[in-house]
Image: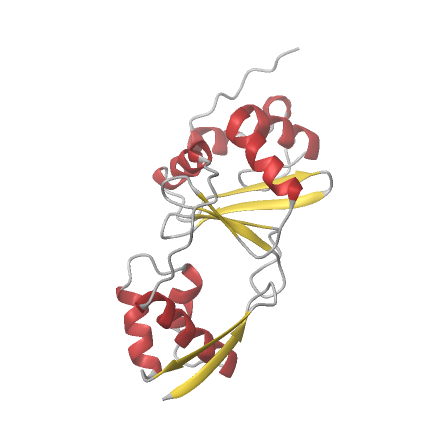
Amino acid sequence: MTTYEVTTRGGETHTVECLLTNAECAEVIRSAPKASDFARDLASKASLSPKQEAWLHVLTRWIKHPKTQPSSGLAFPAIQALLQKGFDSGRAFPKLRLRVDGERIVLARSGAGKINVSDGAGYAHGQWFGAIQLDGTWRGGRAKSTLVMETLANLEQNGIAFLNSNGIETGECCYCNSPIETDESIAVGYGPICAKRYGLPWGKVVK
């Protein structure tokens, strides 16, 4: 039996003991319907660094022996439904990229359907605030941010109107992060491609 230790982005250390080989762990992950995109990426690699190997075994342990997390009582079903639209339109991993009070907030739907909320800086260096589950309930992460929670509440309550205003303020489409340039796009905060993808109105400039 080999001991593996990993440290999360939030500084939390996890240690597991595992008898499985790397190949056996990869098979467990591939057969798990709710395995994370990060776990599936590790399972697909032909060779692993020591750090990646440790994560492979830790994630396998978590899949085989999942922890039951208590609900926070918060729920964001409208946000879940919005990103589901992007997925249904053909986007494998739809995202919302927001900038609020100078802070970047990214909502990214995983292959398993949950929505991870982070600062968009990547797994190794960024902050992970939590995830919206398939049923819309919220599971908080290690990083805490009042601004993030206020933004999620605003988005849940005001939906498209909030996204429109965010795009207009930043000059960037919150759906695809492209610059907003035409009068039609500036008027609503997104472009024609994302309008079609998410079933949004576009093309009429309000003077």
